[in-house]
Length: 240
Ligand code: GLN
Image (cartoon, rainbow, N blue to C red):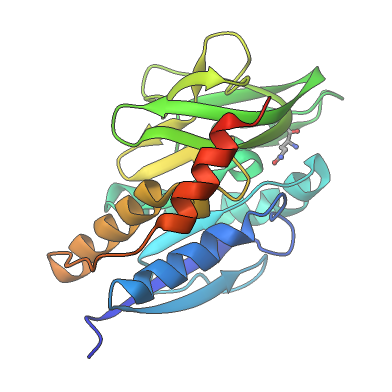
């Protein structure tokens, strides 16, 4: 018997979904089912009505053009996303949507795409792309492994906590050794790859937060993560 249903909302899958980001949604769905719950996937694209039932929100990266295309719509649902974040809804935003969960992304050409200010971060596009395998070390999750490809350099304001520090790679800006940002149960990060198949601790953290919020508790099942562990081992040993 199902332990209950969790609704995963993926933001802008048509415009914001590169370098395997769809794998995050698939991993959440599969792990929710392995834990004995049902998972319902909902895609949110520009112009859609924002779903009423929401347990986890995921969003991926995109080209500057994709970010510009969804900007107006994202800002229109920004207050709802902030309300949900304040209500402890877990969210995972990768790269392009991570940037737009902040105050703004200024492209290399000087175009400012305003964000929703849910995260206290600012991003400015640079001349050099930061590309390659990356490891973020986090107290809560240990090593988080992934792949980054961005020109935007992100700096954290005083209200944002980093996700972790960079052990290999550039991270937020290639300078301060910080990677990602957190606010309540919201994680923003530059790690594509996909992130969640190789980092089950992050996936289960999102699911646990969602289950506790919806049902008052989380009763996980034991999952055989030997393939995830092997994928992590190989990814960690890859050169930059
Ligand atoms: N266009 C943004 C940048 O280059 C985001 C890229 C991405 O999402 N991979 O910084």
